[in-house]
Length: 216
View 1 (cartoon, rainbow, N blue to C red):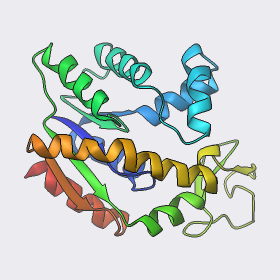
View 2 (cartoon, rainbow, N blue to C red; view 1 turned 90 degrees about the horizontal axis):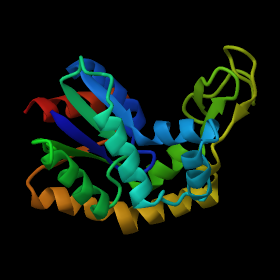
View 3 (cartoon, helix red, strand yellow; view 1 turned 90 degrees about the vertical axis):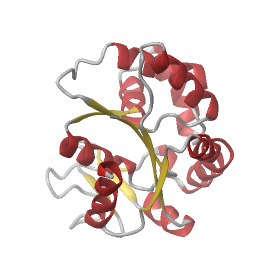
């Protein structure tokens, strides 16, 4: 299966996608992780993408399309019969380009699953995220805070927040989602490939719904 996992920033895609991938023996392709790795390595792509990511804007379509096409063409997870795309496509143009690329090899997207979460809950989730600068342990300052403010429980490292999780960037990310990514839902709905599930519950409950939708 080729699955697109969708939803606004903070909906839980990064939590659910790797869990689902392990359960159904799929390769998890996270464009967010790929881009952040490029930024950290200060590659040409990373430097190009950083200014857009820091502002909460979308990285230009062609950059994303080229990156995903290369990733799928050179996928070294050949043991996995399925793939889960997390964070792509984010525009209708990207969705169309993805369909064209898959069609050229005889493939297609089998399902698009959207995690639906109320706007106020999204803001609460995003605004409290923090990560240890040293060991990368994730925290949430409201839901799963460290024992000591600003310090990692595992290694004592400093907790940092992503630039795109700052309040102004969060608001912009949600606005960009409404304007550019939400229309992708209609694109897949028109193809009878869209399933919407409630992403506001506990992670285990959301996962049960997600797994059921994949197996139905």
